[in-house]
Image 1 (cartoon, rainbow, N blue to C red):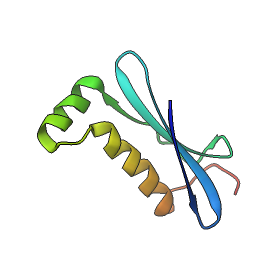
Image 2: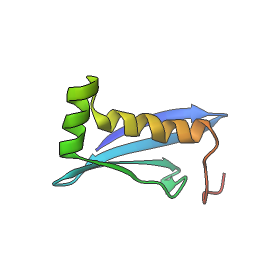
Image 3: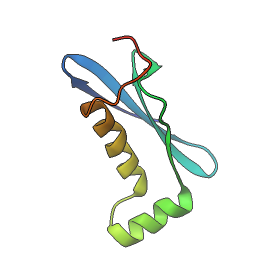
Length: 80
């Protein structure tokens, strides 16, 4: 599992990226609680296709989107 940590307005968030046998998953957390209901996923095949077309892995786009959600205030269901 990859863990990316960052701070917004003095609050520390982590974005976790993991995989199973066929997909990559990304989800954002604060104090080990999900910050919103979104779990982003991309299949290995689409991740590779995205890389061929755009030169970067699709899973990195999911990581960027999960981080952007926090910066843009899409935070639900966590007591801050």
